[in-house]
Image 1 (cartoon, each protein chain N blue to C red):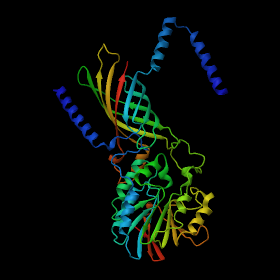
Image 2 (tube, rainbow over the protein chains, first blue to last red):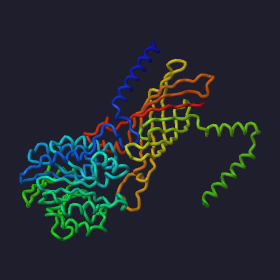
Image 3 (tube, chains in turn blue, yellow):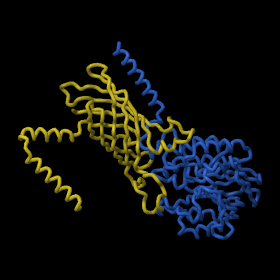
Image 4 (tube, chains in turn red, orange):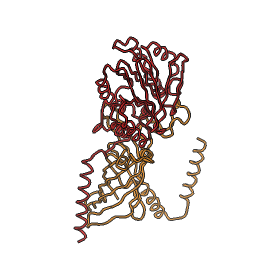
Length: 273
Length: 207
C-alpha cells in the first residue's frame, strides 16, 4: 500500500530529525556568532595553571613556538603528532592567527586538534582572529588579549600587537599592562616577550614603537622576543639594541621553533616535521 | 542623476505609448492586472537558524509551470548572546524544487529542495569593502556577506477552502557557506559534518 509506505518513510524521517536535533551543534545563527554551548572557555588560564603547576627548581626550560594555523588543519594535526612524539617539551606557545576568517567554528576546529597535545599550550590573538566577532570569541575561548605566566623563574609576557585591527580605538600595545612588569616582584630572573605582529609591520602601531622598545629594554633580563604573522623564519634586531626578535613560519611550512633556556643563556633550532 | 532622468523619461514615453495602443479597455486592464499579480509576493517564509539569523522571515515569489522556482527575501535577527551584541541580517534566497509527491488529498512531500542564498549581516565589524585603514588586498573576502548552498525537504499541507491561503509547508534544510567550504577544501581533518548546519522553516503560500 503506497500510503502506508509513505507513512513509514515519514516516521523514519521524523526520528532522523529528532536525532539531528539531539546532536544539536548543527543549529547556527551565523558563522560569526558565538555558540555558547559545548565550547571551551578561558583556555589560557586553564593551561597556564597547568604550566605553573609544573614549575620547579630545574634550570632548563624547553618550549615550542609556532603560529598561523589558519586554514592548515591537516598540518596542525601533524604538528601535534610531531610534538607528542617528544618527551622533553614543557609547553607550546601558539603565536596567533589561530583562525583565517575569525569564525567561531575555526577556533573550535583548531582547539579540537591542539587539545590533543600532551603538554599545555597557550594561544595569542592574531589579526585574523579579530575579524567579525572574532575578538569576542577569542575572549570567551582563550581569555584576555594580554596575558603572562611564570615558569621556572622566567616571565613570559604575551601581548596583543594587532593595532590595525582595533583601529587605534583601544590601546594596542597596552602600555599600562606592559608597565606592570617593570618592577616584577615575583622571583623572576628572565623575561621573554611574545607577540603576533612584530614592530615595523603594517599591523603594529609604529607610532608607539619607540615607547614599546623603551619598556622592553627595562624589563628584567629580557632574553628575546617572539612573533608569528610574517609566515617566514626570521631573526631581527629591529631597534639595533641587541634585543632579537625571532619569527616563526606558518604551520603549512611544516616546521616550528624549539627553544631551550638554561639559566641566562638560550639556544633554538628549527624542527621540521 | 542625468542617467536616471533619461531612463525615467524613456519609461514614461513607453507607458504612454502603451496606453495609446490598440487593445480594447477591458483587455488592457486584464493584462495590467496580470502583470501586477506577477509582481505581488504569493508566499511568505519564516526560518529558524541556517546561518541567516535566529529567526528570519519575509515575502517571496513562486513561479514556473509547477511552482518549482522560489525567490524569497528575508529580514532576520541574531539576539544578544553572552554579551555579544545582536545583529540584523538580510537574505536573498533562490530555491528549486524539481518535483513533489502527493500522499493524499491534503498532504504532499517535496523530497528534494535545493538552492543558494546570500546573507548579509549588519554591524560595525562587518564590512563589505575593506576599510580604508588597511593596505590594499589585506583581506580578500567581505566579512559581512556569506554565500550559502542548501539541500532539504518539505512537507506540504493543503489548506481548506474556508481558510485564507493555498497551502502551508514545513521544511528543513542542511546548509553550508563559502568560507566553510574553503576551510574544508584540501583538509582531511575537516569533514562534511563539521561544516554543515541545520535549519527549519514554515512556508505559507497564499495563492
